[in-house]
Amino acid sequence: MLKEWQRLGRQIYDLSNWREKRRYWTFCMRALRHQRRMQALYDWFLQDGGRAEILADNPFPIEQVTRGFFYAGSSFEERVALVKNHFILLQRLFRPEYAVRLGKRNGEYIIWESPYEDISWRAMLNFEDGQRKEGLMTLKMTLEREDLYQMMFWLGFDKQGDASLYIGAMQGPNMENARDVVKEITKRSHRYRTKNLILYMTQAAARAMGMQHIYAVSNQGYYANNHLRLDRKLKTDFGDFWEEAGGHVTEDARFYEIPLTETRKTEEEIPTRKRAVYRKRFAFQDEVDRQIQEKISAILK
Image (cartoon, rainbow, N blue to C red; front, side, top):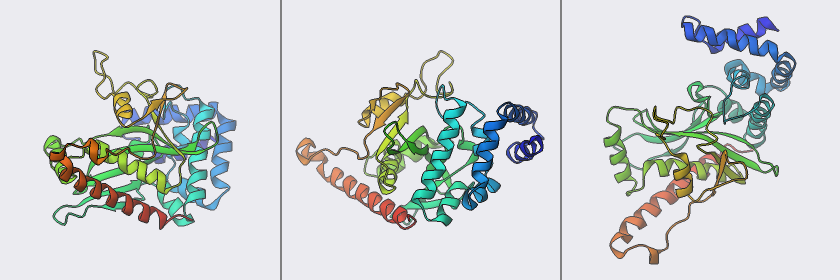
């Protein structure tokens, strides 16, 4: 199988880059070290026509199980199960052509478009290899084709066997005028913060797919340390955000459970002077829900 691991490695890594070349050889060595389990996973993909088509275009799941991705302390066996469960649910939920499309690289499927005609503001599901450290799919919000916010996740089963969506990480804008862009989008969404909106869309997508739970990786569970500054203080505090969204730490401190539906304030809880803004915001959110439910339902089995 060494030749097959080398072939897959050449698809994954840019061998003209010395760092990528080192990763390539590391991948081959790890694949050989776990030869039996790697062969079993590879064969599992090839046993099904849809999965074989996905793997021919997207070899990254084979690489992902060899690296310490997804969440801190994940074992090789856990990563294999995670990858398989994601694609099992993908095929169970979606019509075959869309299961394949969403499993391939850059096979985006638009689930929401802004009502504003002067801007191209969208949300879509896709897989990008650049996001593979934290998940197997991304819910991406774009503005004029630039990435605005992204939620990386995978589909799986929790300890009770319930179908669940697992958020690996959230990523904000990385553009020169990011502050101004976020300010403008927040204004257009009626003072609803953009990072809250990407979570709201993820919740809507999870409900549309019939997920029973949403879990999110905590600060303790984040697989890498790139959310820490040099002084070890947090650049991004996932815990604060998940708790603000109504989440709570599970028995496994590496994960929060997030509500499937955002809790809204009642009219009595909203100051009179702000009620008009909240009504517009809720109407905007309802339209987000409607579109996402409609778009995802259209590709379910």
